[in-house]
Length: 123
Image 1 (cartoon, rainbow, N blue to C red):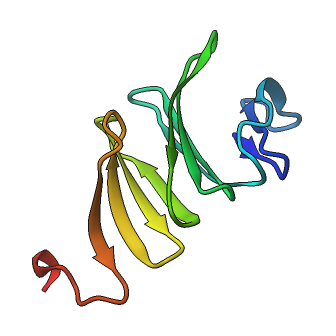
Image 2 (image 1 turned 90 degrees about the vertical axis):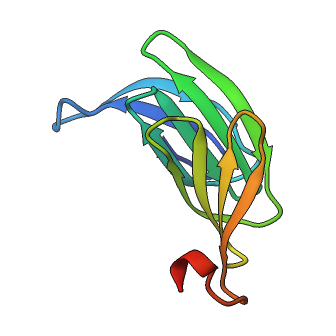
Image 3 (image 1 turned 60 degrees about the vertical axis):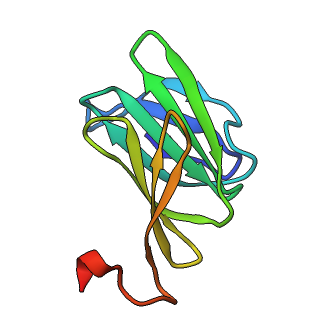
C-alpha cells in the first residue's frame, strides 16, 4: 500500500519484485497528503491517517474495499496501529499524546501525554 499527496490510497500486488501491479486506487480518500497506513491481516482492516487529522478505517478484500469509519482528531497523526482483535487503534498524535480509540464507538482514552507525568501504570 502507498499513500499520495492528493489523498489517494494505492493497493499493490508486490509478489513480482520486478514490477508491482496496481490492484486498486481509493481516490482522494483524504483531504490532502496521507501520513500513515496501518494494516491488520487477521481482520482484513486498513487504517489510514492524513494531514487532514482524520483516521479512516477500511474493510479490505480483493473484491471490495468498504469505508467502515471516519474519525476526526484534534491533532496531526504521527503513528497508527490496529490492534490484533481489530476493534481498537493505538494512535500517536502531534501534540505528544498517545491514545487508544475504540473503532465502533470512537471513544478515546489517553494513555500518555508528554507534558504530564507518566501514567501510574508506567511508574
